[in-house]
Amino acid sequence: MDHFTYQGQSLYAEQCDVQSLAQLYGTPMYLYSRATFERHFKAFKTAIADHPHLICYAVKANSNLAILNLMAKLGSGFDIVSSGELARVIEAGGDPKKVVFSGIGKTQQEMREALEVGIHCFNVESIAELETLNLVAEDCGKIAPVSLRINPDIDAGTHPYISTGMKENKFGISMSDALATFRLAQSLPHIEVVGADCHIGSQLTELQPFLDAMDRMLVLIDTLNEEGFDIQHLDIGGGLGAPYDDDIPPHPNEYAAAVVKKLQGRPLKLIMEPGRAIAANAGIFVTQVLYLKQNEEKHFAIVDGAMNDLLRPSLYQAYHQIIPVFKQSGEPTEYDIVGPVCETGDFLGKNRPLVTKPNDYLAVRSCGAYGFTMASNYNSRPKAIEVIVDGDKSHVIRQRETLTQLWQGEQLLPQ
Ligand code: LLP
Image 1: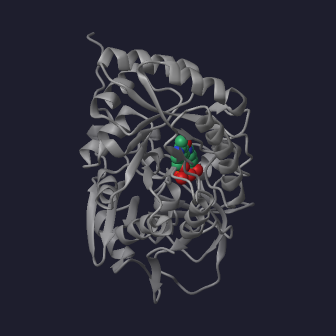
Image 2 (image 1 turned 45 degrees about the vertical axis):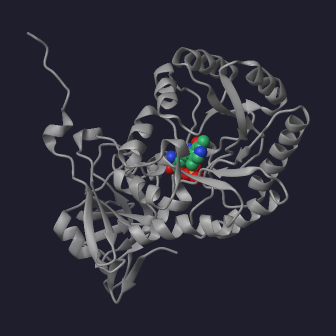
Image 3 (image 1 turned 180 degrees about the vertical axis):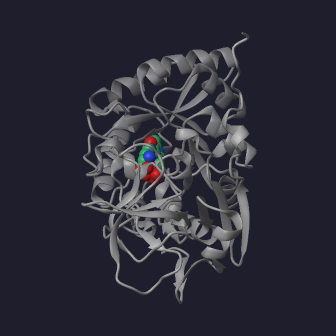
C-alpha cells in the first residue's frame, strides 16, 4: 500500500495533485511520499517488536540525503557499499555506529574511513578482504568488528542479475569454506568476529528462500558457538520484493514476523538490510508525453523520461505500471512508452493500453528504489529533479541538474 491514489480522475501523492506538481517542477521528476517511506519502515519495526534488532536501510536503493535523514530520524541503521554511501549517511545525520558495510571490493581507504568513524560491522566477503582489513585496522590502531558473508547456496528465484546467494555468484564465502574462514578471522589480532550474514538476492516474492537461508546460517552459528565463538548477530541481508505487478510479495510485517519467529529463544540480534521493500513504492517517476508516433507494427508514446533516468526496464526488462496522471475517457491504444535516448533498449514499458496525447503526464509507479540511484547522464541528459510530498506540502530534495553541471570537472587540453 502506498500513498499514490486517484481522487476522481487526478492522481494524488498524499494530498498533492501530481499534475500540479509536474507543472510546477517540470518533468522528468521523481516524486516521493514521506508517509509511504515511514509506513514501510514502521511495518518492519512493529513486526520485529522487542526482539533485539537493527534495521539497516540499504542506501543503494535511494540515497537522497532527505530520505536518509528521514530513515535516521526513524532510528534506522544503514547498509552501505562505498565511502560515498558512508559520507551520505553521515551528512544526513545517520549514526555510523548503526552502519554495516557490505560489498566485495572495499578499498583500503574505504576501510580506513569506516574504522575511523566506528561503524557497527564490516560484512567481509573473502579471505583476501579479511587479511587486508586486519592490516588496515592494525595501521589505524583499531579492532575491526566483522561479520562474514556466507553464501548459503539458495536459489532466490529472482532475476539472474539480482540473485546473489547461489554458488556461481561472486558474492560471499561458500558454506564449505565458512568454518575455516571464521577460524582464520578469529586468529587475526585486529579482527573481532561479531556476526554472520547472508544476502540471497533482491525482489524475492516468497518467504521460503529467506527461511531456508536462515536455517543454514543458524546451523553454522550453532557450530561456531559450540567452538567458542561469540556470534552476536545474524544479518539476513535485504531482498524482500515490492509489488510491481500481479506478483504480490509477502508484506514486510509477515516477513519480519516469520524471521523473528525463527530466532525465538536465541539471544541472537537480528540485522536486516531492506532497501526496495521500504523505498520502491514510496516513489513514482513522472514524465510528459512529447509525441505520439505510429509505424506498421506499433504505436509509440515518446516521453521526456528515458533509460538514463530509469534504467530498470532496459536493464532487467523490469515491469513498472504506467498510469495517467489525469485519467481520460476514450478507447485505449496499446503503446510502447519510449524515451528520447538513441537506443532501441530505451523504453519504460511495452504494450501498455492508455488513453493519452502529447503534453499529458504519465506516472511510472514503484520507482522509489533503484530509480534515481541508477540514473546516468547518458546522451548528456541532466538528472531529473527529486521532490517529496508530506501531506499537502511538497519539497524539492534535489534540484534538476543544470547543463553546466554536466561538464563540471571536465577540462580542455592545454593546446
Ligand atoms: N544488502 C545487500 C548486501 C545487497 O546487495 C542488497 C542489494 C541489499 C541489501 C538490498 O536489497 P533489497 O532489499 O533492496 O532487495 N538494481 C537492482 C537491485 C540490485 C540489488 C543489489 N543489492 C534492481 O533495480 O532491481
